[in-house]
Length: 127
Image (cartoon, rainbow, N blue to C red; front, side, top):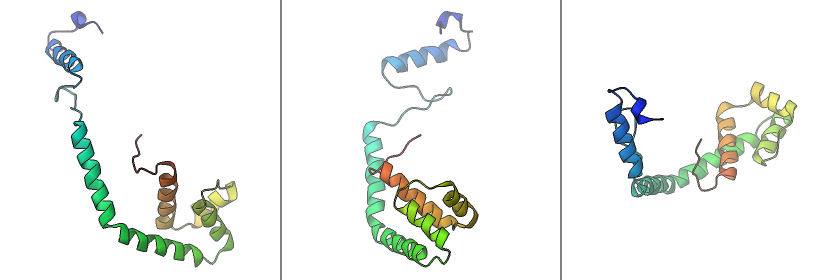
């Protein structure tokens, strides 16, 4: 974009934007959000890891409860679909439909989290 073609109201914002590009940061305000510094990102990650460590016992209990719920499922087709998802294998159409129709929402969320953790073991996921 040519800054000379901008109207008078946009030129100051454009100059701040160009200055931010030169400094590899963008100015806050005027539609821009300043990116956090690397040490702030690492600090957030450290805090997240502390929370995970503090709740790991709770997570183990939750995992055991979810596994018990799978084992106690009476419907053999539903139990098979749960086992396939837990093993990280691709579901067939019938299994997917059974999970949509009869699957427990909390258990499906837990299985989805396990699948996500297989693809992103460091716990960092973005879009």
